[in-house]
Amino acid sequence: MSLLSVENLTVSRGGLAVLEGVTFSLHAGRALVLRGPNGIGKTTLLRTLAGLQPPLAGSISMPGEAMAYAAHADGLKATLSVRENLRFWAAIYETDTIDHALDQMNLRGLAGRAAHSLSAGQKRRLGLARLLVTGRPIWVLDEPTVSLDAASVALFASAVRAHLATGGAALMATHIDLGLEEAEVLDIAPFKARPPEEGGHKGAFDHDFDGAFL
Amino acid sequence: MIALLMRDLRLAIRAGGGFGLGLAFFLIVVTLVPFGVGPEGAILSRIAAGILWLGALLACLLSLDRIFALDFEDGSLDLLATAPIPLEAVVTMKALAHWITTGLPLVLAAPLFAVLLHLPTPAYFWLEVSLLLGTPALSVLGTFGAALTVGLKRGGLLLSLLVLPLYVPTLIFGAELVRRGGEGMAVQVPLAMLAGITAATIALVPFASAAAIRVNLR
Image (cartoon, rainbow over the protein chains, first blue to last red):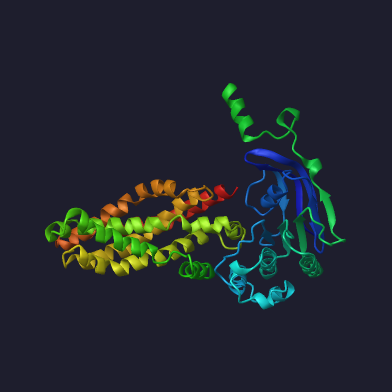
């Protein structure tokens, strides 16, 4: 069963198309890793999928209320403790428990510490633990393992595996090897948008110029 | 939604949260006025209503840029925008949290500060009524300015320029209500206008603020 399917999607950054014709589907129990050089539009694609910006063209289909998005920034409140940060997101997503998230991301011993006193890697683990408390089946992750050490990457990989085993799916953009051999890899470089002269999607500026000179 | 309110209140009272800043600013403004215009009771009591309202308005303005900017910087605004609660509800809860941490202390402390300005005795009651009715509008309108300038570096001044004109009706009718109440005149018109402005603001502005945030997050 396909949880997320994307068809012929064109995404834009600052009014200019960066990727076009992106087509893929993500099935339950599968992980998909997006790869491509810097600036190709991985983050833009993920933000579009998360609904933070509208696509220029194409369609995204997925069940409602199914996605949990994790961006570059973890969205942690520095003066709240680890437990308070997680409790907050659990309340927002109306899930009941944060214990499994604390255990899976090895944060149990840090639960009472304020988030500002955590190291970069510990903050990242807390950010990933947030995904676990959302209870959402589709994870959309942007560079999930930045600043994690090898042990924490393994911890993350096992959390993703556990998520996949329960019928979830994960879409990740990363340059770092995640230790998830079973994940499919999609190189999005071939979807790079063509310039408008070559038949690519016209950006907001091209339309305006057309109008101005007609 | 309640969780969001509780989080914002908790953040406000923790270190660096800015709780009480508005109140301290209000106190300073009010104590500076007699230095500027002289300690004459007759003059002070005539301008007291206006000064108290201006002080409340400026104190409210002081903390507006924190409403969304902090959440934008640490990435939680992105996450809240993708969370299952609508952005309009996020905005409303943020406005409520701002009012509880800024507007409500002003309402409670205003009678004390009014003593410093020789506010006429019958006006105290109307001062409380007007602030209680008017300050929620200040917080809600503030979310609109904060939403428009979220993501702008040092958008604080721009925020003030955008929001202050929107505060004018509330200021006019709020101060007028206190003045008329103090002089024993009929208060129905400013009272109804003040309440109406606040009700309309609460009903409509969260949609505008949420739309502005969506555009700014793109």
